[in-house]
Image (cartoon, rainbow, N blue to C red; front, side, top):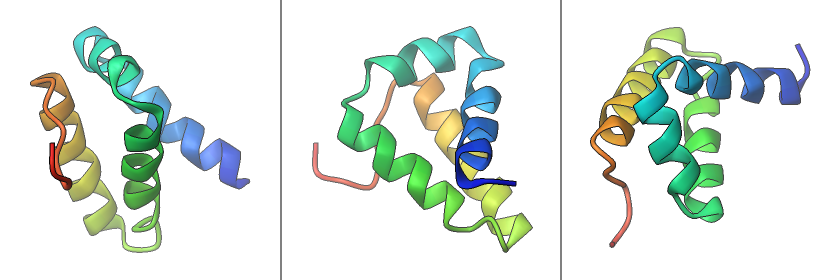
Length: 70
Protein backbone atom coordinates (compact mmCIF):
# COMPACT_ATOMS: atom_id res chain seq x y z
CA UNK A 1 0.00 0.00 0.00
CA UNK A 2 1.10 3.53 -0.68
CA UNK A 3 1.41 6.07 2.14
CA UNK A 4 -1.69 7.94 0.92
CA UNK A 5 -3.73 4.72 0.97
CA UNK A 6 -2.55 3.96 4.51
CA UNK A 7 -3.57 7.40 5.74
CA UNK A 8 -6.88 7.07 3.91
CA UNK A 9 -7.50 3.85 5.83
CA UNK A 10 -7.23 5.81 9.11
CA UNK A 11 -9.55 8.52 7.81
CA UNK A 12 -12.07 5.93 6.63
CA UNK A 13 -12.10 4.46 10.14
CA UNK A 14 -12.84 7.90 11.60
CA UNK A 15 -15.68 8.39 9.11
CA UNK A 16 -17.49 5.31 10.43
CA UNK A 17 -18.78 7.38 13.37
CA UNK A 18 -20.48 10.64 12.29
CA UNK A 19 -19.74 12.39 15.60
CA UNK A 20 -16.07 11.42 15.51
CA UNK A 21 -15.79 12.57 11.90
CA UNK A 22 -17.53 15.90 12.60
CA UNK A 23 -15.28 16.59 15.60
CA UNK A 24 -12.17 15.55 13.65
CA UNK A 25 -12.99 17.95 10.83
CA UNK A 26 -13.27 20.84 13.31
CA UNK A 27 -9.78 20.26 14.76
CA UNK A 28 -6.91 22.45 13.53
CA UNK A 29 -5.13 21.04 10.48
CA UNK A 30 -1.80 20.86 12.30
CA UNK A 31 -3.32 18.77 15.10
CA UNK A 32 -4.95 16.39 12.62
CA UNK A 33 -1.67 15.86 10.77
CA UNK A 34 0.26 15.22 13.99
CA UNK A 35 -2.29 12.75 15.36
CA UNK A 36 -2.73 10.80 12.11
CA UNK A 37 1.06 10.70 11.68
CA UNK A 38 1.49 9.46 15.25
CA UNK A 39 -1.02 6.66 14.67
CA UNK A 40 0.49 5.75 11.32
CA UNK A 41 3.97 5.66 12.87
CA UNK A 42 2.97 2.49 14.72
CA UNK A 43 1.76 0.70 11.59
CA UNK A 44 4.49 -1.96 11.82
CA UNK A 45 3.39 -2.74 15.38
CA UNK A 46 -0.26 -3.76 14.93
CA UNK A 47 -1.18 -3.83 18.62
CA UNK A 48 0.24 -0.35 19.22
CA UNK A 49 -1.37 0.92 16.01
CA UNK A 50 -4.81 -0.31 17.13
CA UNK A 51 -4.29 1.08 20.64
CA UNK A 52 -3.41 4.53 19.30
CA UNK A 53 -6.26 4.53 16.82
CA UNK A 54 -8.84 3.42 19.43
CA UNK A 55 -7.68 6.10 21.88
CA UNK A 56 -7.76 8.78 19.20
CA UNK A 57 -11.29 7.78 18.21
CA UNK A 58 -12.38 7.78 21.86
CA UNK A 59 -10.97 11.26 22.53
CA UNK A 60 -12.19 12.68 19.22
CA UNK A 61 -15.68 11.36 19.98
CA UNK A 62 -15.55 13.46 23.17
CA UNK A 63 -14.27 16.41 21.10
CA UNK A 64 -11.06 16.47 23.15
CA UNK A 65 -7.53 16.99 21.95
CA UNK A 66 -4.63 15.29 23.69
CA UNK A 67 -0.86 15.15 23.59
CA UNK A 68 -0.34 18.90 23.65
CA UNK A 69 -0.95 21.96 25.75
CA UNK A 70 -4.38 23.33 24.94
